[in-house]
Amino acid sequence: MVMDARTGEVLHSRNADTRLHPASLTKMMTLYIAFEAVQNGELSMDTKVTISQKAASEPPSKLGLRAGQKIALRYLVRAAAVKSANDAATAIGEAISGSEAAFARRMNRTAKALGMTRTTFKNAHGLTESGHLSTARDMTILGRHVLYDYPMYYNLFSRRSTDAGIRAVNNTNSRFLANYKGADGIKTGYTRAAGFNLVASAERGSERIIATVFGGRSTTSRNAQVAELLDLGFSRAPSRVALRKPSKPAYIGGSRIAEAETDTLPAVTTTSQDAVATTGTRAKTIRVASAAVTRSLRPTSRPTTEQDVAPLVAEVKDDIETLLAEVKTAPTAPKPEARPADLVAEAPVQEPADVTVAETVAAVVEAVAAPVVQASAVAPVESAKPMIRPKGVVLAAVAPQEPATPSRKAEVVTRVSTSGGRHWGINVGRYPSKFDAEKVLLKTALAEMSTLDGSLRKVVNRKGGFDANFLGLTRETADLACRRLQARQITCFMIGPD
Image 1 (tube, helix red, strand yellow):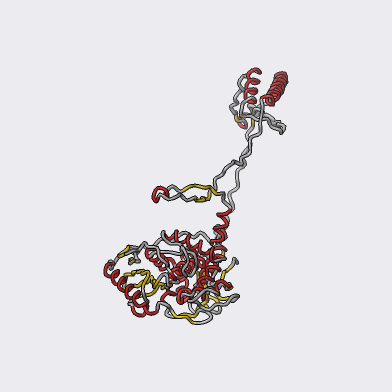
Image 2 (cartoon, helix red, strand yellow; image 1 turned 60 degrees about the horizontal axis):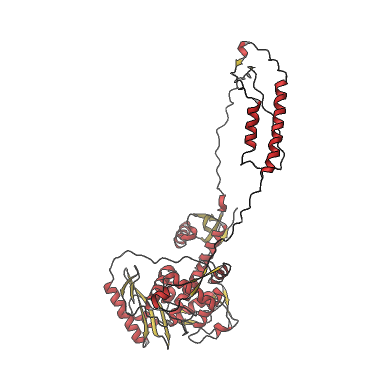
């Protein structure tokens, strides 16, 4: 398979979808998930990993780890990428997912998200195992994602040698890297069942090509074939083309968390009809997680009956008739004397309309008996009806207001808002000049746009130099930014609110 890495266009393929043993090309997926886990804070490159007996007992190629030994994740990553160490790959999988089996499930979920439709992983290292298969197309897709999704780690694959913590190791792909112009990775693989495999990438000018070979008969013949395929790719690829990076799959968390959440959901059994229609074989039973709500938790309304309403209506009717009788027999209050005309403002008064007792009682009874009214356990509170304003009401005299005493000019005071908790920051070092501090701030902002976007870059002059700070972050964002910067060997510590 030959692909233009810039666009994903396939320039040449032959038997690219044949499922074969990938051997140590598997470690590209192991490292891809390790980079994902570090970037999302599951662990860091400085995390100390305890080596299990299973990891220590893996066959060569290996770093030589011992059971119970503790070693930083960065050295395991280097050993897996450069030396293709099987013990390091298993230790990485166990550190991330708890066991190699759980890590293999995460590998398969990630492969599906990347579009690797004909790949099944059973382990983290790629040693021959039944059902552990992939294709040249899928491995080319994976190599392209490693290149563009985590470019900050891609240089690992071009190192001729590196420090793996307990000893220095040499690159298994050193011959090809030395002999082909522009080659900078990616990964070799060999087992007796797989033959000699290689996913290689090279860049010349603005062009970048990825080529994959499965089943070579020797290192020399495989390298020659890959070189020929890369030459073919450079001859067919356009010199200038718009870069279209692959879409990075959404992060769904660690395998242990995802599996725990899946186990809590009810399962629905369905039958796949596609297998019967296309192959004539027996259909498979698939368990599909379903979170459908089967019952409502809404409380039922309090029941009311006509028997509850009838006594209430009768009681209200009797009270209204008695009240109206008392009002009609009450003596009329005398009108107050009128004030002089210059102090009195005649206000129009609306006389109340004549309403019969029967009409009033009927209206009240109808309102009380309406279906929307429910019986209440709380006794009604009696409210007094406001009296009609008399015709002669003296308006209050308005006293002339004193002219406002001139005051000093209003002073506007501003302060930094702390809404949303964005009063945290991070410090990325102290530098001898303001220019150096500003340069580091700009470089860091471009490298870590996902967490530092919208923050304020500020240089603070201290006694020992100039501090390079990012301000205006939440506590969670500042913590995540620091962990991600520290994973790239960039000095960082959090700054709390004053």
